[in-house]
Amino acid sequence: MLTTALTAAVLAAGCGGGGPSAARPSKAYQRSLVFTQCMRSHGALAFPDPSSQGTFDTGQFNANVPPVSTALRACQRVLPPGAFVVPEAQQRQVMDQALQLAMCMRAHGLPGFPDPVDHDGQVGFTMGPGIDPDSPLFRSAQQACRRFGPGGAG
Image 1: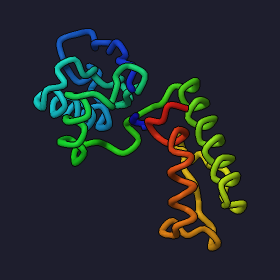
Image 2: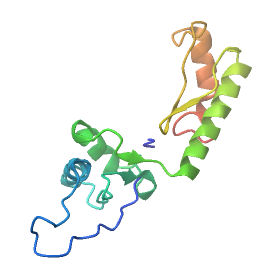
Image 3: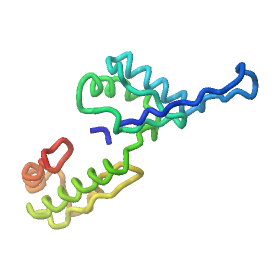
Image 4: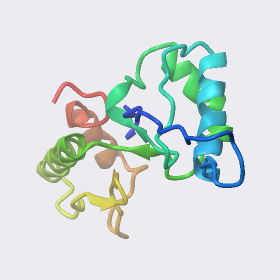
């Protein structure tokens, strides 16, 4: 799942006739709006508008189902950096699942498998020199622990 869902915020419209004091959308919002339009043009018709800060809350859509998954692939080129905001509860769930994966990998012959790290909402692993993702041992452990990976049944 899109680490990788969005909370569509209600955008406050500026009052007045659009003169110099009228609120102008931020550049981040404008870039994210281009992404929203791309998503909708590729079949994700209910994809939400960005917040006034140009962000999306990943809790508002399921990135694993078509047409959203298909549109995400098609629109990746116009996705602004930092546009997705993952709700705290979902971040905790992803981190918990990643910790379970690390423990499982260690139990299946990789005692040096690292704990997951969170880099600005993106959970991942930093592999040290003793971990070879191409080794038969790693692949065997990965297969045994697949239920804890992305989309696993945990």
